[in-house]
Amino acid sequence: MKTALRTMMASALFLAGLPAFAHHAFSSEFDMSKPVTLKGVVTKITWENPHVWFFIDVKDADGNNVNWGCETRGPGRLTKQGWSRDSLKPGDTVTVEGYLAKDGSHMADGRKMTFADGRKIFTVENR
Image (tube, rainbow, N blue to C red; front, side):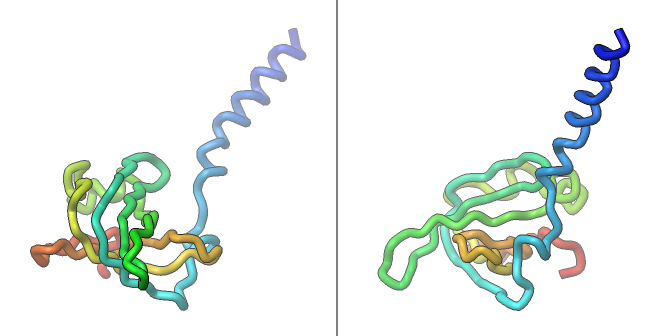
């Protein structure tokens, strides 16, 4: 009986810690010394914890589409800033300002977005 209780408690502690494994500090993935501006068309949005991600097709120097992943804050923080699931939609043309991923992948921290009509939305307060 004690072994079963210990196993259940250990499992509960492990499972409770899983979301923490998925979360990371900005500085562990992005490089503040490498700002980037990307202009493209939104292809996908994932509105999930711990971060909302959106993906945009950006034309490279040869005219080919390159799909970039842009990480933002979590859904709760974005909602408090006035975002909703409809703030950004596939097909929207946006210019994204942020910072490149440290690993050199087509990934960026999406801090500020400007829509084709000039509207701006931010993912970090006071920026």
